[in-house]
Image (tube, rainbow, N blue to C red):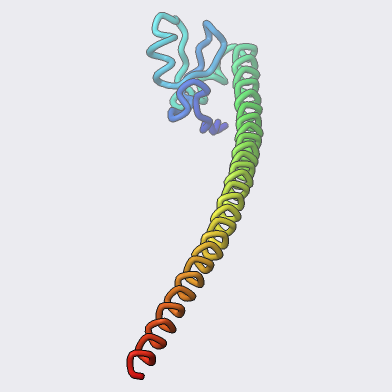
Amino acid sequence: MNLDISSNCAIHTDKEIEYFCKDHKTVCCVKCSIIDHRSCSELVDLKTNENSALEEDPRDFIEMLRRIEEFLMNHMQTNKNNIKRLESRTNEIVSTIKNAREKVNKLFNVIENYVEEKGRQLCKEESIKLNDLNQECQCVSNRTANQDATDQL
């Protein structure tokens, strides 16, 4: 029988499950075995003792398999929950960005309308001033022309 133990540790997600602690009836990685199970009396190396587990008490082996299955089920559920949280968070972020974009667009619309209105108003005021100035210039030009005509007589 060949056990394929290739799941990662729930605590140290970058490490694979390599041991089964009979004292605590749980699976663990190398880091866990050093940190949490150093004083445990029965730490089984799952990779090197795959077949020897069958030679021991079948109840222990069945319990070990049950714990491994429980661990894997918890691990799968954790992964599903993480995916759901990630999807939910992604939706929240996208919604926040959309709301922010709408607010920014509204502000740009207000600024655009203000600039357009003030620009048109300024153009109108300056056009009136320039027309008045042109009329004054025309009057001066006419007076100068009249003065020249009178002086020539």
